[in-house]
Length: 271
Image 1: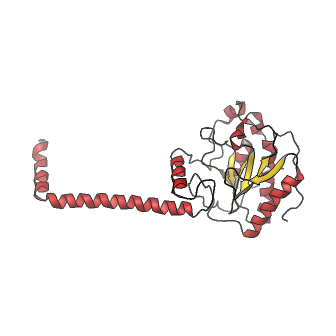
Image 2: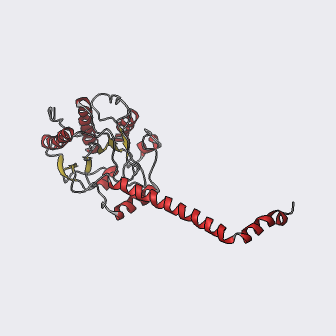
Image 3: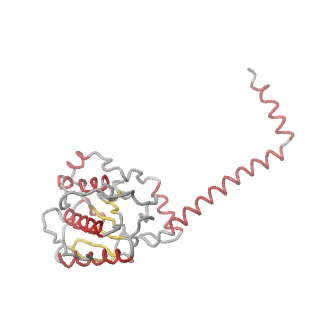
């Protein structure tokens, strides 16, 4: 087949209608550009609506997290997307990561998971959010946990989420496991909508994800920035879930303290 003869009619048609074809091409290109810009604007507004966090709440914070999204993980609800045996042998995680620090077994969470946008930061849930009274109970528990364990735990403004958020830290002078050195001793902090970032053992993190209580941060396990056990536990919706949330908080403290120190559970705080 002679390609030149087959394409001749199309070339002639373009030459005869050059202005019209150019206008059509320009319109299509402009439409694509407008569509992209509209998507970016809508994405920025959705990100901004999540409120204050560890990044500047402006275009620079949005661009920073947008860069992070290019290499963040998508399998945040897969219980264990790693070689568990290899991590257990590593100096970073070791055998301690294979222990559960939860009192008893972790029950299954009822109902569907909340909606969680795919932003790297802030990492928040946008449905099933905690009521103000529940948030007050969470904040009271932070203080009670520190008061019950004064030599081990302290409450300070969050370094990861910014000074508007309070978090629990290991007391100064306590040696940090290699796994959490990048967190500088901060191991758990609740957010304004009731979800809570915390560090759990690999066993507890996998169980929490599998049973519907949590999902990993999108940067967990990425280039050693955050440990694989850095998860977001969903906001408690009722008294029963608040009790489970308290158990997760204490399990996190036990783990980051190395499993060899007694962590006292505050009595009936927020009940």
